[in-house]
Length: 196
Image (cartoon, rainbow, N blue to C red; front, side):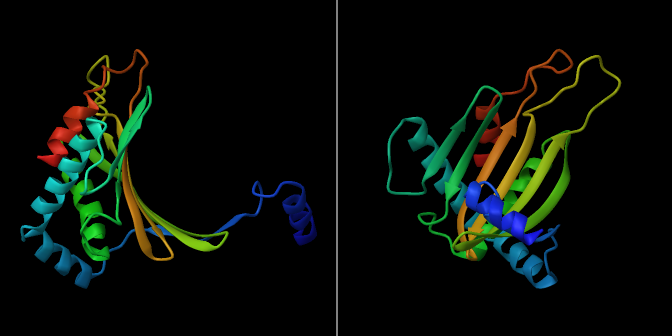
C-alpha cells in the first residue's frame, strides 16, 4: 500500500499525501483556560477587540487600507464572511483565542441559534503543522411553519494556527436559496450585531 501511495505522489504531486491529519477532537477548554477567559471577558479587552475589528471592517468596506486590524471580506452569492488577521490585531495569542470563543458565544445568543459542532483538527502539511479550531452554528428549525427561518444562515467560525502561531479567525455565513426557506437576514445585520 505504501508503494502505491508513493507512486500516486510522484504522478500527482500535491493531490495525494500532501497532508496528514494527526488529531481530530472536540474542543475542550481547561478549567485554567476558562478562568482566564472569564477574567478577559470581565475586562475592557473584548470591547477594545471588537472596536478594532469594527474599524478594520468599516475601512475594508470603503476599499481602503488602514493601520489597524486587517479584516478581509469574503463574498459570494450564497456565502459571506470576514477573516481577521492576527499579526496586526494588537492581541496576544491567548486573547486572540478568547476572541474566537467569544464570537461563537455571542452568535449563540442570537435568538434561534444553537451550536452543533465544536472541534479542532491538527494536520501535518508540507513544511508546517496547521491547527484548525471550528465552531458551527445553525438556526433551530421549527416544524410549525411552512418555511424555515434561516436567520443569517449556517455560521462557521474558524481559528487557524500554523506551527502553533495564530494566523486568522474566519467567520462565514452560508445561506439557503430554495423555496423551503425564508430569505436570509443580511450579513451586514449580523456584523452590526456582532461588532456592537
